[in-house]
Image (tube, rainbow, N blue to C red; front, side, top):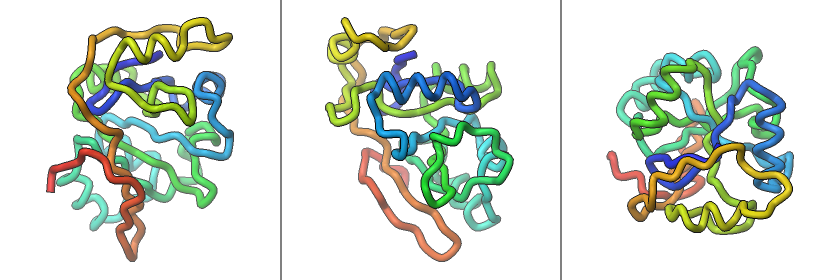
Length: 178
């Protein structure tokens, strides 16, 4: 489904359901080797999916919820669809700050894909008109588009790779919490 988020419109699907994840890749026409971030409801859910030490947990408690995707080492038995993982056995996790997504995450108690609702290579958008236009007439499209109107102007989330020995900003977004 295409759905508003705290940044831009996103494509959401059950991140454990391989068929649903495959459809997200098909909708986006995204290369299979390019990972997709995952929304989680809280740090507890993140810790079920990724290896998070005490220092990282302390950082995440200050950083989330918000427009910040953290790249972390994946746990061996996370259950996430393989396509969501980076080549270096990492996963991008984010606790969004958006009531609709947060309620959905609580209700289903499963991680969701959290990628932009656009064809790969095309611009992500906060405007519902652009989202509908991108998918109209396409052979494979979202099962549902939730129209929340135009979202406030925003960029995609900031992406930070968080390893034991360093923090590296991979993409600058609108994250302003610190």
